[in-house]
Image (tube, rainbow, N blue to C red):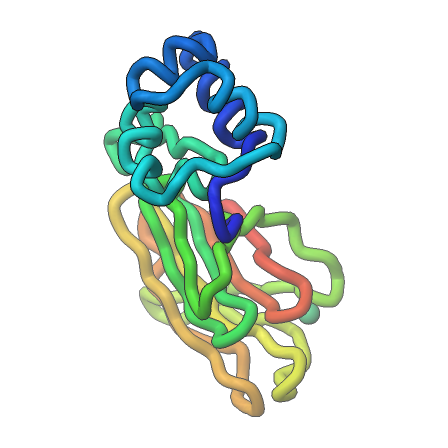
Length: 194
Ligand SMILES: [Fe+2]
């Protein structure tokens, strides 16, 4: 996240709403020239103008500061379209049913993009009674380890935390169609549809 609103963000949001500099200025009580100065980095809006500016641009102050409006089309909050966020500083794991502006330890976290596992992050599933035994074949040192595994269906999330020097193994009931996720602190998020 930017530490303060940027000219580029103001221009992008204003143009996205099809407003002229004069129209935006009129709504918040400044001239088009002032808006132009902000957008070309020749000045910054006073802090007392951030709220009215955000309102005129149809976003929250936090979106204005970030320069990116958040649009969730996932209104039914289908968990299958949810997002994982992991803090690189403290390892905090957050899960959302849609896009969000998430920050931890002062860092704005991007939604993690899952990829197919390579040979170094292979996961195996064995049937055990009515459950499944999952193993991620990966080192579990303090510096490089699998941090969690999760099974996500449209209405349920099972999340298991792993710890360095432990095993990246767990039992889970894989009921229904969904996606298995597992996360390596160095190599990111992996997914397998089941
Ligand atoms: Fe790894």
